[in-house]
Image 1 (cartoon, rainbow, N blue to C red):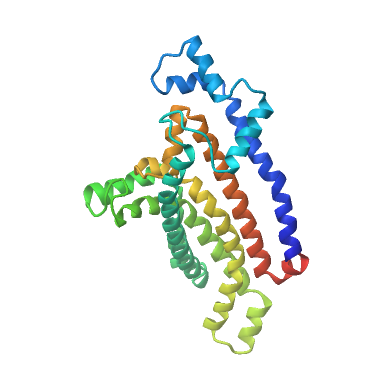
Image 2 (image 1 turned 90 degrees about the vertical axis):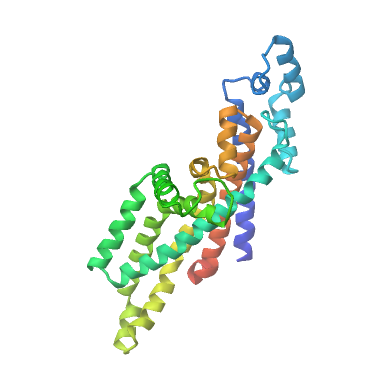
Length: 309
């Protein structure tokens, strides 16, 4: 296990360097001149003189590798530069917006786990029954609706018509319900199908048949079937965590949620390059580390992979 961990950490070094390079190059490939953008975003008319001054201030006249290494060195210390839009440090803006996004993603993950496990187990136990078909049908319809449209429908029903929940913002504990449900809809069908199929497959394995021959109760057998079916689902669920955080962009804008997704959209509209660079870098690094944790968890759970590692 230690050998596997060291190998994976060593593999992460070139991947992380590649990610930082990609995040830096991506913005530099933009047809807009960052100096002119930084001037325009502050509602100042760009002139040849102030563009030259801004390029000098931003260090844009330095060689490419000098700028990249300087940016990388600062980013490693948590300094992503200042926002073009409000001249505040990007790191502070992201640190302020990240907790609401993590809160939203955490509640969404909880909804996904509870609904998926309950519906998946029910469908597996009642395989091909009317209940199984109805649950899968409802889940499929809920997932087929685009996220932004589902959010608007839920807002219209529960906030405007019934007045049970707030329409937008982060004003109370109940504020998170509508955006979290909207965000989780796209994932529930995947996990219901995954848990159902894995449990049905495990129900037909030799160990389950042997248990029935020995006269074990069906409830006891299903407990073992459920436990053995979780590995694939847990792996997929682990990889969904960064997707949930990165996927809040649309939902946060619909519900005016003060998170990092809304911050990113505002930065794109303002062409706030330092903010976009930081967002891309943080999301990519998050994906890499979640992938590592999922792999380690998978190796730790599965004795066959543990022996191979």
